[in-house]
Image 1 (cartoon, each protein chain N blue to C red):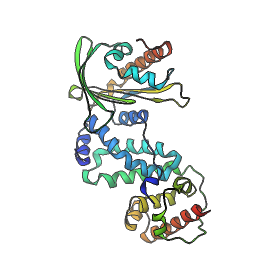
Image 2: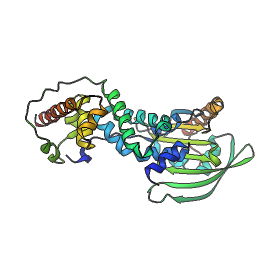
Image 3: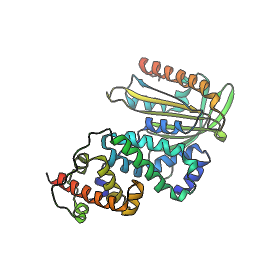
Image 4: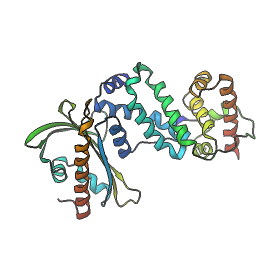
Length: 166
Length: 165
C-alpha cells in the first residue's frame, strides 16, 4: 500500500493560529465570521499598508519597506514593514501567505497573527486574530491584548458588512 | 535549517521557529492523525501541535523529535478516535503482510480503515505506514511485544477482510 493512499489530516490557517497562540501565556485571540467571501477578505487584508490602519485604531500608518518571495516556498512573501502606533515607528518582519499572516515585532517584543479561511457556507469568512507579547512573565498584558483583538475584529466585521473601502 | 535546528530555535521561544516547526511536522502528524482518528483527524492534529509547543521545553534531545511527536500524535488521535463506535475486529479472510503492501491505488484505503476500531488503525499506521518495528509499536502502545504482534496480525486480517467485502 502506497503511503500516499493513507488518509491525512490537516491544520487550516485558523487552527494554526490557535496552536501558536497556545504557546504564549500572554496571547489573546478572538475569532469570528466576516460577512464577505474569503477571497475578498484576504485580498483586502493582505494589502497591509492599506488595511491595518483601517481596522487597528492604534496604528496610524503602515509602510512596507521590502517584500520578496520566500526562497523555496511558492506563494509565501517575506515582508518588512514599519507600523506607527502611539507615534512610535515599530518595525515588523512578516510572513504572508494565503490565509495566514505572522507579524513579529523587532526583538520579538510583539506578535500579531491574522488567519482566515472560507466559512462552511462558502459566502462568508472564518477569521482569527491573535496578539501576544511572547516573553516570559507577560501574562498580565493579556487583558489589554484581549481588548485590542476584540476591537480589531469588531472593526473588521463592520468593514466586511459595509464593503471594504477601496 | 534542519528540523533539529528549528526545534532548538523554537525552544528558545522564537515565534517564527515555532511556526516553522508546526509546518515541518504537519505532513507526518497529519498522516498519523488522519489514519487513526479519521474524520476527527484535523482536531487530533490541532491538539497534537498544541501539546508539542507547550511541552517543547521537556524535549532534551532535539534529534529525537520525530519519536517524541509520534507518541503525542498517537495519543491525541486515539483520544479523538475513541469517541467513535467500536466495530468488531473479527477477521474473516486469510491475509499476508505482502498483500497489504501490494494494494494498488484504486483501493479506497480510507473507507476500509474507517471500518476498523481505532486501536487496530493505530497498529497498522505505526507498523505499515511508519515502518516501526514490532517492539517499538508495543512500547508506544504500552503493551507486551507478543500482544502487539498478535494484534497486528488481527489488524491486517481485519483490514483485508473489510477490503474484500
